Figure (tube, rainbow, N blue to C red):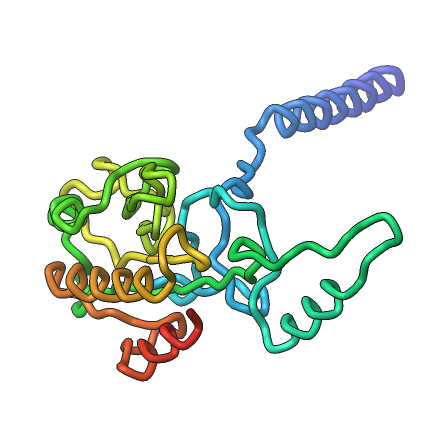
Length: 234
């Protein structure tokens, strides 16, 4: 009996070890969380991530900027830039200031649904197209303008306000979404005041056509004061 009990105990230990090993193997084969770093976050001037149309979901504009990242425009940025520009080495001459050296500023707007049902996905594609936006990179919509070289380039972008951020036909057909996120970055390919005016005018019209509300980055109703502040930053 003692031998049988010992064999049963050993068999039990072997079974437990086998289950543990199988569990580790299964865990290693599980799909890892996808890297979403390629979808940039919309951040404010202090680097904080904005909330999306839904309060607890980070927002993103879904597009990869073609320009190199620059320091966000803050109250202290001007002083930092001035100091950097006056620092030179014995072998380097100070560069002349150009438009491309201006600090980047993000102008963010949201279009949210007036009712709890959401924006009608079946209307979004049609309305965006009517307002001169084109479906493209990162599966979102881009408003294109002619740059100084007469080439088409993106002025501002419109993305889904919530996960999955994209605006494909599959994302929109027969669906209702809480809202859209819009972003313009200045300096822009054209005159900044004209870019901001175009951005606001187009956003207001899209919101009206979709029976939605235009909101600022704090997700409060976009006011004339907000518009004035946008233009002052140009």
